Image (cartoon, rainbow, N blue to C red; front, top):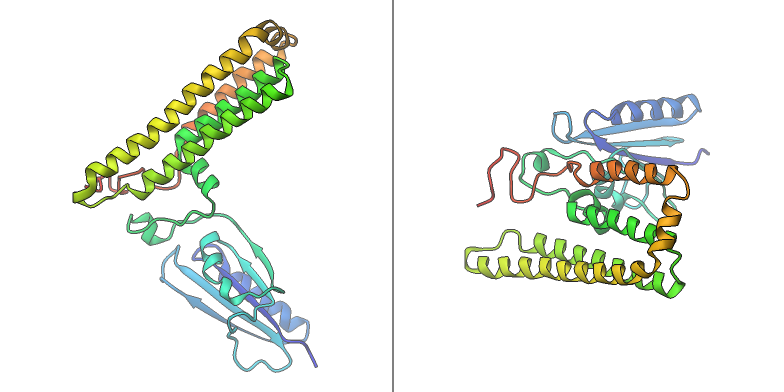
Length: 265
C-alpha cells in the first residue's frame, strides 16, 4: 500500500504557484501514485493569495489537507507562508522563500506589512539605524587600527550597543504613537522627542568616549591607516557603499504618508 504524502504550496498570483502544483501532481502520477490537487485563489488578480493542496496516495478521495497534517510545505512568499503554518507539524519539511510581495491592502495604504523581525525591520525602514550601524563599523575599525586594549574595545562595544539599542527603542516608540487620537497628540509628540533626545545624548557620550580613547593612540591609528595605499581607498569605497545603503528607499511607504502622497492627518 502506497503511503499518503501531503504537499501544501502557498504564494501570490504571478509567482507560479499553480504551475508548481501542476508539476508536483504530474510527478506523483508518473511515480505511480493516485495524485490529486486543489487550487484556492484569493483575489483574481496578480498579487492575490494562492494556495495549492496536493496529495499522493493509494486512493485519494479528496485533495484537501487538514490542519497539522502537511508532510511538505513550500512557500513562495514570506507573509503567505506565515498564514498557513497551522497546516504544519513538528515533522513537516518546510521550504520557505523570505521574499516580500506587498498584498493589495498594503500597496493601497490600508494596512501595514507585518515585520518578521524587529532588527531586520529597523535596517529596512529606519535610516537613522542604518547610519548608526555604519558608524559602528568605523568605530571598531578605528579601535583596531589604534590597537586599543581589550578593555577599551569592550567600552567602545558597550557604547555602540547602547546607541543601537536606544535607536531601536526610539523607532518602537515612534511606531507606537505615530497615530494618536486628538486628545493625546501633544503627549505623543513629547514622547517621540524624548526618545530621540535619549539617542542623541547617548550618541554624544559615545563620541566623547571615542575621542578620549583614540586621541592618545592617534599616532598608531594614523600609521596603520597609511600602512597600505589600499586602506584609504577602501575607506572611500565603504563611504560610497554606506551612503547608498543609508539613503536607500524602503519597500514600505514613508511614515505618515499614504501612497497617493497624502498625510495621515
